[in-house]
Structure formats: structure tokens, C-alpha cells
Length: 398
Image (cartoon, rainbow, N blue to C red):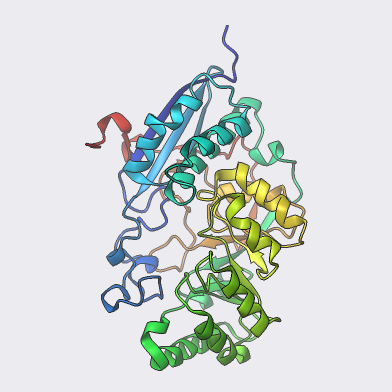
């Protein structure tokens, strides 16, 4: 008789529909994240300022990984990476999974990471590894009939409170979220006029929610050190709660200069950083006030726990970027404040919808800005409609 924890099959799929699955950028046209003017790393080129889709956000698309065990359960997870990601799993990562014990998550993670370092220590390769990691945690939870948060230390909080990222902070406030984060619309490439327009825009956002309500600004790695210092100074009267992803995450020295210029302001980053190695200097320099790794990108839950342990030694909070229930289980098991991000999934940003669209049954969502953590096994989700999935064997890869 086989050990019930033995992995007997690994299956990969492309999510064929827009707005479903783990690729935040693969949304239907008209979604606020896609077609709203927003400062981005391509803002230096006028033709790419107005739309994220124009420079390729969401071009890879969502994937699903299923891990089946001899015990008859199927762990499932989603993320991004599209055809290249499922090719990697099928042709490389699978050798470390088939026949392995699903309890040995650290071993599988280490083998996949070490084997792929020669072609991808960050970015899509680590995001692909993340989805496999999350599927293993889901399978283990289902085998043990335990929610994942019980596998990583148990419940510290049975309720989580949320801030919301979206285009309408007044609606966010009305929906009960404790704070709102808005995208910065203009970049340094637009000069003094763009700087003044940013200040005017953020003034309008502050007026919408009134004084005292936490208002954050997402700069999406689009600014320079001098520009960020000037913008933060010009907006001091607006009481911005934090400035997020102002610089490229590799610009450690830049973050140090920002903290020197504005030591009392909060600077956050980490959404586009990968693995504990990428976070090491961000943590040890102590210039970042909140770290924001994405569970579906950073190396999965396994690597997030390592990063959090390191950050904890410096008393730096870890508040993950998006990631729906994957973040909820992590937050529930941490002794830190039970705060989480909800990225508005509705086209107008005025309502609360599942983070992963129609993909899953069992995905819980915040209500009145709060969420009671589920005790369903694993991450509590199963595929809702398999017609949304295209198996690897049916994908055109050549």
C-alpha cells in the first residue's frame, strides 16, 4: 500500500478566461488596474503611460497547479506565468515532485530552487515555484483535514481587517476598509507639470476621504530619489500613511536616502522582490517600514515564512501584497497586527469580488472590511469550473 502522502500526479493548466486566476494583470478591458492612467516603469515613454496593457502587464496569464496524492486528495493553487511556467513545471520541476512525500515541502522547495538558479533566481521562475509550493501546502492541509494556518503555527487571529487598493478611496471607506491605497498617476518623465498634477490628484483623494483616514500611495517603482523626496515634501500636509514601491527594489542606497530625507514618513516595498536573498538587505538596512512580498511570487508560503522570521528579528512588519486566501492564512498565524491588503477586483473598484474571479469555489472575501478566517482544510478552495482550464497537453507550446 502506498503512503497516503506520496505525490502520484502533478497537473498544470492555463486559465483561459480573463479576470480569473492568479495573474492580477490579466483582467478584462475596462478594469481600473488596466485602463486608468497610472505611473509605471514604462512611464518614461509617452505611448505607454496611459495603459498597463500597452506594455504587457498580464501577457503571461494565470496558471493552475494540481498535486494529487495517494491519499486521494488534490491540492490546488493558482498564480501567474502562463505557458512558460507550466512548461517549467512539466519539464523540470516535476522530477522533484513525482513520488515525493508531500510533507517534505522544504526539501522540494530547495531542490526546485537550486536546480533552477542557472536560469532564474527571481521573477517568473520563482513565481512558478511559488504556485507549486502553495499547491503542496493545500494538499497537506486537505490530507490532515486542517486549514493551512494550523500547519504553520495555528491561529493568532480569527478575524482580519483590510485596507483596499482601488481607484475610489471614498467608496473604499464607505465599504468599511480601514484604509485606502491609490495609484500615483504621473511620473518624473512628465516634469514639473506632472509633479503638480500628482499633488493635485492626491489632494483630491484626501478630500474624498477626509482627514485622519489612512491614505496610501502606490508608485509602482516609477520614481527617482530626488523626485520622491520632492513629492513627499509637497504632500506632507496630506498626511499620506505610506509611500509604496517608490523605487526599484534593488535600489537599496536610494531607499536609504529617502529615509534620511524624510525619517518620519513610512516607506514600503517588496511586492516585486523575490526570495529571502532579495529581502536580506531590505531588512538589514532598516530603511523600509513595511515589507510587502506577494505570496504567489516570492517563493510561496515556505519562503514567506523564512523572510518573516528574518524581518521579525528587526521588528519590521510583513504585510503581503494581494494574494487572497494565501495571505489570509499567513496573517492569521502571525502574532503581528492582523492587517491585510484587498486589491479591488471589480471593474469600477466599487464592490468586493473574489480575488481569483470565478476560478474557485470556497474563496472567502472581506465583508465590511473584515474577514473571519475559514476552518476549511487546506486553503479552503476547489476548482469551480474546469471549462476555464486548458491542460498542458492541449497547449500550443512549440
